Every structure is written in structure tokens, then in C-alpha cells.
Length: 379
Image: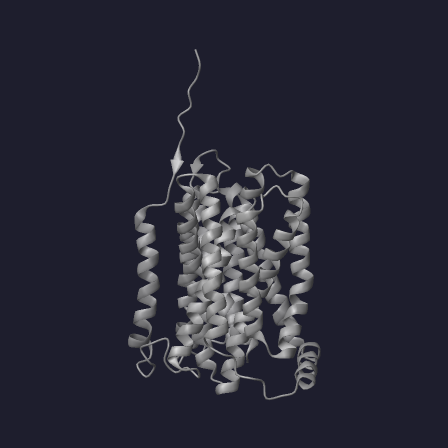
């Protein structure tokens, strides 16, 4: 007589989603009313840019985040589903990430030298348009699939610097205000996380009926979003030209980066953050399913992104109004809490609910640190 094992399934409760959403919007709504009444009630106020241009930029950034989120849902699933060998997958990933690591910093210097960060955003949209068209007309098992990974990785590298550099340049050219940039940075983190959740919902909905049709529909959605992004960059908000010659800007970039140790330390801190995030996304799924229970990772992912949204809304509470907390002190506390949260996971396996709570705490710290580092880069 055989022994039957009853499978156990773990899912987050609906109250967790409601709690995160309520905390996010309560943090945004209550800050100007109870913390410092002298501040504007709108996060779009007190901007060096006009409110219309600021909303236009955030809309464009949300489109870019959605394009990034569509491909992040699949991961290696497309390669495995199409029958690509492990050797080809490994070669494509190494080539893609290696080229992004080497070429993205060079592209950042290039676009900064020519003063064309709007052109960098245009290249980002074109790369995603190319990837979407390729996936529609070329089979995934094509021998040149590595070129697809290369394009996606370059687009991700451009996304990491182009939009932030564009908004900083516009604020500098039209009247620099640190508070305006601070509001923009945490709003960018908030909107990026929300767009990632929305893209995941869209892709999972498209994949629900049929995998082949879902993958093709996801490519079509990316093509559509990329076309809108190209139109917005080329026909919409224009970048203010540089006042300094190209050679002077290139020389100032070299001097500012290599002569100031604080910038090098800031870059090292940002590299550590990105490295820890990358390691987290590699290990979080195997850690959650280690006890054998069935876990729907697609239901946990919105909790993580929602926690990042909540962490970003803490920035105006800490750095606005009469708060005396220095950004450097805040970063020390945030990195310490994040390290302790992951240390608990590394020390001993915890129940899934505890793991999800610790992972949410980690991502709340990420949501706080990303705009804080961005603000430090402009000081």
C-alpha cells in the first residue's frame, strides 16, 4: 500500500497587500500635513522644472521601468522552454552581463561628454524595440540568440544611468534645487517599483491561457510601449543644451571622478548595493522553497516591490523639513538593518512567513538607499 503525502501550499494573505498599500499612501499623504506644514502638499511642487515637464518625465520613466519589468518576469524561462542548451544559455548570459559591465560605464561617459542623455534614453527605447521585434520574428532557438541577450543587457545598463542623469542635468540648467531632486529621486524609485508590479501582472495574465501566445503577446506589448517611449523622447520634452564646451565637460568629469575620494567611495557603496540585490534575486526562490512546500513566487514578488515603494516614501520624512538626520548616518543605519535581516536568513532557516518578512525589510531598505545615494551624487 502506497503512502500519500499531502502537499502544503503557502500564500501571503490579502491583508498583507492591503497593509503595504495603506502604509505607502499614508506616508505620502501624512508627511506634509503632520511633519512640516510649511512644505507643499504636493510632491510635484517646488520643482525647478515645470510641473508638466516633471510629470512628463515621470511618465516616460514609468514606461521604461515597465519595459524592463516585462523581460525580468521571464528570466531564463524562455531559453529553457525553447529547448536552448545549457551551454548556449550560459554563454549568452556571460556575454550579455559582461558586455553590460564593460560597455555601460563607457556609454555613460560618452553621453555625458556629448550632453545627450535624452539620446541615451532614445537608444534604450530602440534596443527594447529591437528585442521585441526579434522575439516576434526569430525563434528563440536561433544560434544568434546571444545578440538578443547582449541588446537587453545594454538596455539595462543604459537604464541605470540615463534617466537620472537627464533629470539632474535639466535641474542644473534650469535652476538647481536639492529638495526638488530629492522629491524626484524617491518618486522615481516609487514609480519604478509600481511599474515592475504592473508589468508582472500584465505578463502573468498574458501567459495564463497559452505559453506560446503569452510570450508573443508580451513581445507585442514591449514593442508598443517602446514606440510610445520613442515618440515621447523625440517629440516631447527636449533636453536643455549644455552651456560648457564638450572638451570642458569631459575634463570636468575626469577631474570630479578621479580626484575626489568621496565619489569613489560613493560608487563603491552603490556597487555593493547592486551586488547584494543581484545575489538576493539569485537565492530568494531556492531559499523559500527549501522546506518542500509549494510557494507561489508571483504572489510574493508584489510584496517585495511594495516594500521597496514603502521604503522610498520614508525619504521625505528623513531628509525634508526640520529633520537633522544626515544622509550618511541614514545610509549606515539602513545598510546595518539590511545586513542583519539577511544574516538571520543565512544563520538558520526560518519559517516562510518569517523569511518573507525579512525579505520585505531588506527591500524597504533598498527603497530608502537608492534615492539617498542618488541625492548624495548631486551634492
